[in-house]
Image (tube, rainbow, N blue to C red; front, side, top):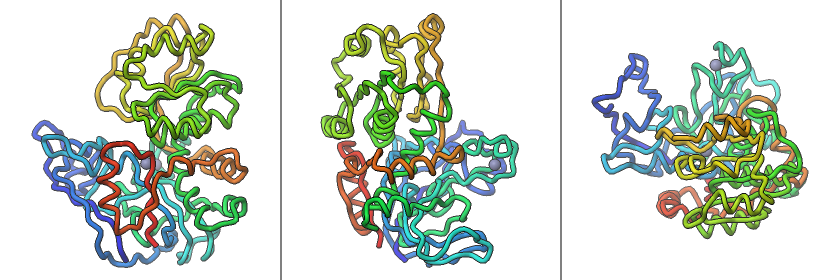
Length: 385
Ligand SMILES: [Zn+2]
Ligand SMILES: [Zn+2]
């Protein structure tokens, strides 16, 4: 089969403390400290066969994520930008959907022909974190497309326990190809859903929401806020193209943060009350959360979803005086998130297709990655079959 593989040199930085497990398995916790000179290429790989608890999925659509870009892009010293769990060489791609074409012996709930998407977090179900219900923080985590083979390929093996049927979406749109494109966006939308509705239990219809960053995660947060009954959704992004998509997805205001006083503009839009719910999806908390002070409403909630390695100085005095709560959020697995996102897409309440700016064949993947370097597109969807 055809697949897109990322190769990189295993070259731990001098000051990185590599554990024995990382050395022997090459599954490293902090990719940007270890992997050098990344390069991608589309080539032939053996067809996968299912283990007994796995299905083989013929990939219908797979999105290119900001994380994929951060594995493909290197900083000036040659190291990849992505700071998380990684093992190379590996087939990239973790936001996907497709059709089940083969089923392992022990699989009970999936059949050949089912349309499915899958969780990227490959939780073990046995460690203390999993047993406490925190599967996104599994102690033995593998990540599809990061440490195990991904979906930028014609076929992918996935354990059935991570798959979710998207038949409802296909029934709604009446077109398998469209359902597969929508299904490929359940995972990134799930990341925002998890942050907004599982991590923090203060969501109320009617709230004023600010979203920093109109990449796929920010746009998903915006669309979820609109669907969940926010009365204002104010989106900040530096890219005019992304602001235009934010407008299409129902933002009540879209602003360029550059040259804008964030607090003043938010206070003006919210009748001086400030925003009740803030989503950081820009990965630039130093420019988004750090300056945010007077525009935090009393009892506001701040969710941090954007990845950022650098520490950020926050005005905790404002957090205290206004009773603001801050939650970090990671992942999308568990808690019924996939089921609810699929239902929202199927019901017509959530349609992320406006953010797909191009659909391309797997052979064109190198051009797609190149094109995404300037961050004007929100989502490019690869169609491997
Ligand atoms: Zn992703
Ligand atoms: Zn676990």
